[in-house]
Image (cartoon, rainbow, N blue to C red):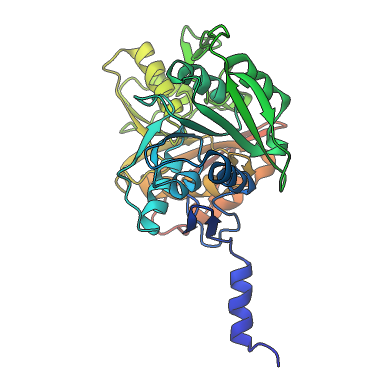
Length: 401
């Protein structure tokens, strides 16, 4: 006897959504990703998280007072599973911190034993156990390791976890240069662990971050923290955008959404000395870089605000005259346009009537289709073989949120 039509539809809907039950040696938990999507197909954890927690349970066997430092836990999977211990969770992503809070709440957990730290902060005590998810950017890991090394003791146990395909040879070399000897585990479900033996006799490396360069054709010195995109030179998308910046808006409230190091905001403020710019990014290091760069260019009283945020929820509707956006097309190792689409929706909400959204992006991403749906139409401002610059105007009653 077959399933009824209604049951079939429900079964298909379940198959079209990601698994949310995270089963570990420390308990079972419901986990979701951030930002939330209606039909999320990806889990909030992966095989590397599962492998790491199995080893912690079987080999480390932490006690109630064990102090555990977690680095780069994308959605709080490790922190949730280890909530019974004393935890620090360090991340450069405000989305990761928000996901951790949401997943603690969803599972009825209290965060009284967890401290969420930004990538620019370090714990105030020596951890007994350090669990590291290998980040996409090795520069971020280098910064983290150099900053943490003075806190570690020979008794500190260090384990690095990641998907095999995301663990290049440079990762091993970095760990051995900064911390000490590495011993890899066997691969399991395409994940691997690296056990690190701390060697305090190694020379302490000088932290090379932030990186500073002179912005081409200007006197401005641009400071870039370790996790800032294209930290060693101006990226080609931003260079193209700088060649086609919009005119100054009449009232002057400009949002640089996904600001990175703040170069777009800096150059708009130079062109519009009576304007106000607002730098928004979900990376703590990006916003710190933008703050340093705009203050270096215009002084401590620069007409700018700085927001570590994944969206524009802190801005009132119809409060901005111009939004500039160079959106990311990936979240960690996952490629997709969901973050860009959310940015465009946010921009439409905060723009005043007649306000403009200017977007630069790779030609193949097809952002004009999303902008046309949201704003009614999208105008091509400029293009080259790799990038397009698009302009969309907020008009009452046009487009769909």
